[in-house]
Image (cartoon, rainbow, N blue to C red):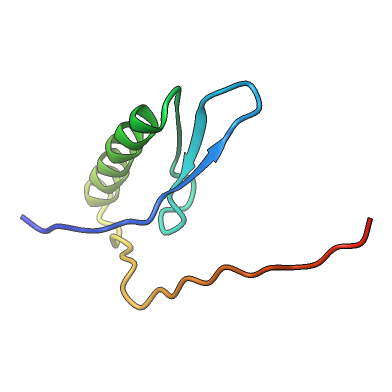
Amino acid sequence: MNVLNYRILLRKEPDDGYTVIVPSLPGCVTYGDTIEEAIEMAKEAIELYIESLKKHGEEIPTEEGTLEYTLMVETYA
């Protein structure tokens, strides 16, 4: 069994709940009413995504070599 790590991003939605995206898996997006539920849904979405890749003989992306930066950008109103 391989263990893969994926970074997830949670965005608080205006009408409550959290949208989750997995940057390394294009199109892998899910939602949860709470942070805990969103994280659990993300785990399930990642597992299903990888299962589909395997079924279709496609390469499984990893985050190896991925660097993360946070940039601050000034805007003028």
